[in-house]
Length: 328
Image (spheres, rainbow, N blue to C red):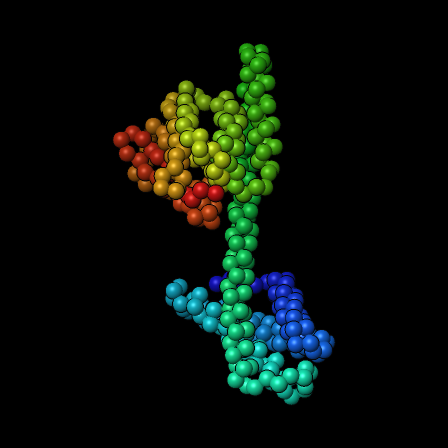
């Protein structure tokens, strides 16, 4: 069920009037009739169709669609759109018969045929508009989820505890390894700057660069040697993934799998049957069951929006989190 906003109804009205104006103007020119009466009739008919579409859509959304099984929702919506076009066209015909807006001889049988055609056109345009609005809603939802993820990341990265530990570690490095201290400061600055970008999806190559900045900063807090191994097929580096997706899984592996102690995290990305697979593995303590936190739930929702899914398992000393989605 898709709620159509007032602003979107206004755009639909403008589109309907434009189509009514164009079609009626074309018919008037084709038959060498006066333009204004035909255009008036076309605009009136378009307005009738719009009003009926608005009424049937709102009635459907409020009292019909939500009670129907999924398989019947689209056919029902198309039928209601067809009836709106059919009845709206008949309304224009009978209005013209009564008021004589445009002088033309059109028997009822031909009016019914024309109304049927306009009904089909209305249902087709309605379905196209539905798909366009659905894509817009998915994009809005994706941006909302990304904003939530950015807030969560910024909260963890800019929190006093995180900043104190990181800056304290960098301060110690200044006397021990000035080059590494400078590199860590630059990585922190790049990480915070990139966190402010609003693109919902970035390429795997960009996501890996973002992850490396994160790794350079978080690595200062490791209590043991943790190895990060990245193995990604070159042909899929341009494929897009939800932003911060790898960072969420690596952070999860560090905190809950390895507990910031010794271990190894391996990232593998490859293509299988037209789908992109990204595995994040760690050799930590594993799990029998897992309770998803904000990060994993957010990632799962964002993956759904691009036709992907998140799965995970733990066996034989290896825990795997898998991202699977269509190539973009």
